[in-house]
Length: 249
Length: 247
Image (cartoon, rainbow over all chains, first blue to last red; front, side, top):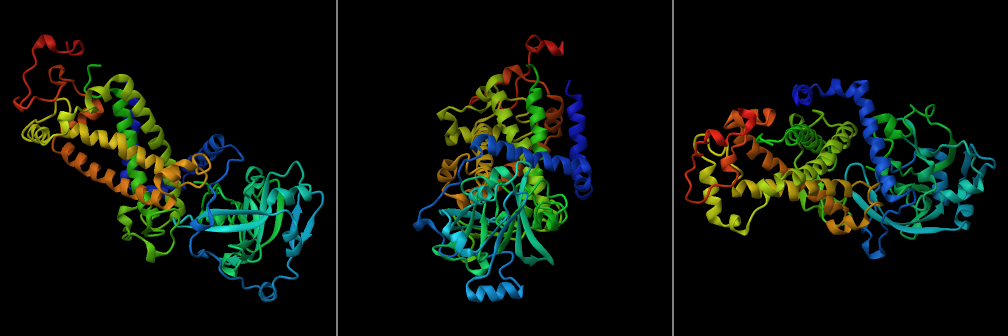
């Protein structure tokens, strides 16, 4: 009665024991298994928390004394450095792609829109956490202002920094794009964003890990698919290192 | 119900064995990404860590070199059989009586006397193989099933940023995200400690391992732990007490 599972389990254990992990890892079956596990976690998170379920918010007293900068902490682009020195007077945030009314907003425009302030925890994929107070505009408000088209499935963030010789980018689906805590932040702890934390504008997607929180954002692009962007992984670290696209785990 | 180990127990045992080996070894790889543990909600400055963890060598990790993305792929995949398995074994243990028969303890079993009896019963030739669980076994297995495995599961869920919206109270209960991460690490090593004891004792009698595949025979005479005065040797089982399946 238990012959079958026993035999396949033994085979599985022997395969693991022989540390043939790299071969197992590269196989198509394993890759689709990983994808199924990742999708399963996302489905469970969203089923249990609801699409609009909020990440915990903290009090000012609970903030970390500083906010660590990681990944890109500076931008080489001369235009960026010039703007940084002047306070970004000519910086434009574009909202483009599958929208009826493309936008190009100055920092002053962004600050003039309805604001959301949230004190949230930032979890890096490496394991550390920092807590900071962010202020900015809900992405939903920008997408509504630009009249995002029905067929858009993902929102891509284009960044001014390069890392590992590539332009940084990230992407999220429409559930996270319309989440109330998904904001384009211009302030950290009441001050304009420092360069190491993504000046002048960065994403906050509070139910996902740090690598999704695109910094130095230049453009927000509504797309049907991100297959043709970068290497098709949906983000810089997804392309470069194979990190999970759903960074909620 | 004449087998020593129910089919559900054996199936879960081996699935779980593979899952926890993968989880532990990929976990060590993940630990190498930021080798500092903190208490509270936040923590990123090694100067404020309560523990600086050693760098785990390649032979102890999956994969055998530092690769956070791949280690995380394996980790969050193996988390499924582990997590669902914990749920499965608890439900079946409660339904088939394994929990009531083998894991529930009376206050008497937590006394030093009971521990000494357990140690005596568990040493010497052929010891314990056909008995029910002694007090120390009940306490250890109970601790693993009742405390360590659920703690592993809940701390793992709590440190997932997507899960924090599901149960923000879980993070509060565990003392914050970095505390949950520290507890995840501590529980992993506690389970490893159990794993080593479990493996050493099982390897002392290969029949015990074989029985975890075949199910073995249950000695109907010795379901209860031996009384303090009982001989450590199991009594011979009268033929009429043998389970029908053996006839």
